[in-house]
Image (cartoon, rainbow, N blue to C red; front, side):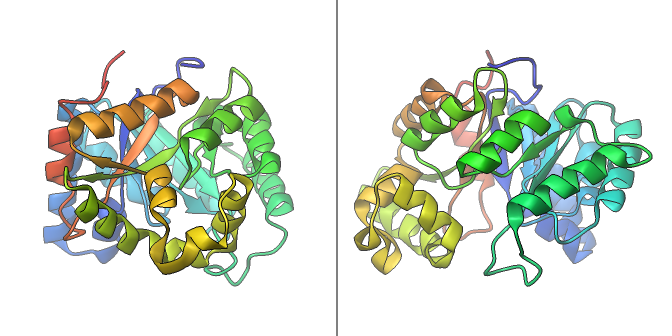
Length: 293
């Protein structure tokens, strides 16, 4: 590991918590809190709230756990101003010292009407966090980053980078840009199924939604993929690069390759059919992955 960043080696990335707490449904929020407690008991180091959560959505997860780090993966800078995020962080950090990590990102032009000059916007946002009456410290924020400029900003003004939808080769390239000290904590998708054809079918159905987003296509092109790889939900070559598929041993080998390439931490996202049932995957993978050390 680059240093003691308190993420552990492996974390769980899921939309389960954001969707539950955003719904306001007591049954969903109770089940989500129970899921967080189980993730901690299984030995995972960090719980990542997906689906563009507000920072305050981490509150029930922090309350339901005792030790695990809780991170937003990722809060878009267009959704809440820096003063609001800083105030939410200060309140939660006072109650749960050192356990909250604020993940920030610029999201995508296809999703955010306010999307303009993303790099400059992130610079201004970080400066506003620094200037808040109760600042969010640089080592308690992490940036969604794919390209060299945002990776450099992650190195210089945050704990490090939390890239989404990357390959093993890209992780090695990102480590070279970040240097030895910044934290590199990629999200990585898992389809736990020894039937590779079936696993690819599930993966292809999931990946298709991202192949209309310019940021991801540009990232893939930098890694040597072409338009032929983006058709019909993604080529086998692309799927094999951005998913860990197969049984537990195969998934563990791919996650190990990411760690060997320079990741300090890997946040696994279980891609399942139906999509609302990831817990069985978390339980099974706990016996295969390096959750300690």
